[in-house]
Length: 177
Image 1 (cartoon, rainbow, N blue to C red):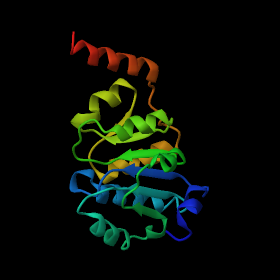
Image 2: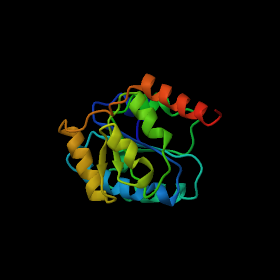
Image 3: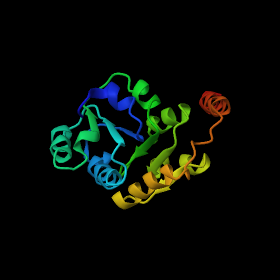
Image 4: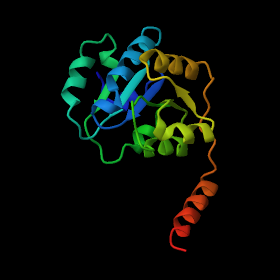
């Protein structure tokens, strides 16, 4: 990205973020295909991919460099605390082909960010329970999710975190009683 992270975070366009290591199951290429399509009509939009460890970092960068949107993609290999960047973004997108229950969805929800998530077993029930936005595992579906967000059709997850935490503590304590 030309101009650096601060300039990107303060830009007027839609800021989309994905947090997940650079590995096959995170499907960053799928996300990048969707963003490339979105960028065609939203040239001020920015995509942040904050990775972490994983074997596909360089392959991801090489792919980004072949896209017309390359100047609007920020790939960060590793970051101890991605929450300050997450907090300045507009939409969290989980593009994975499989997951457990990713903490990143809960972090985005805690920051009141809308979430577009591929419909996979790990987050499926959670997303349905809290009125999340699930899409098929395709770049076209992720692109449609971006368009639906822009059109105001996607709200943040509806989670009462006090109640959620109380329930989690009770479930944990029930394991020992």
